[in-house]
Length: 232
Picture 1 (cartoon, rainbow, N blue to C red):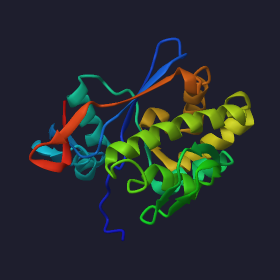
Picture 2 (picture 1 turned 30 degrees about the vertical axis):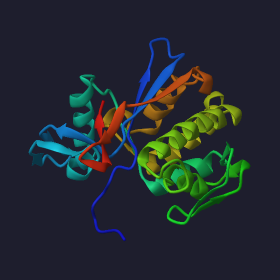
Picture 3 (picture 1 turned 90 degrees about the horizontal axis):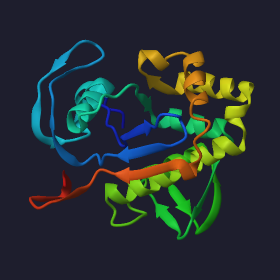
């Protein structure tokens, strides 16, 4: 049910190394307890700081602007850009690419995310891909940590698909994808146009899945609440 609020299911910091040949992706579990800094959302409304709150409360409180400021506060690193993708936008982008191929070593069935995959290789539609990156109950211990591993594997499969269909080497394909993206994602103002996204994506074409390092912020379960994690 859409109650008007928004939650951030997934947060990844992507660092592209100088020379644009390698990248590192760091996932932050949404249930991580953190100290949230005071922040101003995109409408100019100010929000107070808060201690010992879940990481994804930053987005719920003040949208992407507050999420970005929280990541900067936690890491001490300035974020140059942000991309915000909602569920329908995610489906559109995957479908625009013609689907994404993934291989699962075991069957995944999760009624909550509407996913039912047998073990093996699958060509996922946008709707199935969304089910895959959202599933928790079908993998691991049912926590966000197992889901993050799936999401990271999916990102690599997505990069592989982008390479195989020649998006980054075909100006028309890249333009069409960027045109879809401007309707499907929200970005900071520097990435807000089709041409900016085309230029940004063009700078990433030297990076293959093998050149991407995937890590998760080191956390441990909170002794006071097993449904939360704390930074290790």
